[in-house]
Length: 112
Image (tube, rainbow, N blue to C red; front, side, top):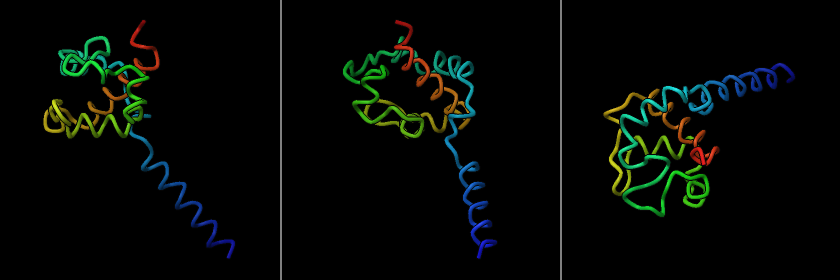
């Protein structure tokens, strides 16, 4: 019985690390470059030029349920509303990197 429990715990541990949040290994420095090239036109300085109420500021991200890597990755990949999908334009690692950058900047209040 102990052996079965040990094997199950090992399996859960491996599964947890294998499918942990992709933004944890993301590169925010590269994300800044991706952001500048693809996102800054509408989101310079964390603003939202299309809908000012939904900025990339931490308070707004939290208010709209977007303050997580998973939520931002989904939004960037699939698009929503006026925001186009970038899933066909950017590689998965680029989306993870830009997500890390957005979360990092949100935590810093976009330098303000």
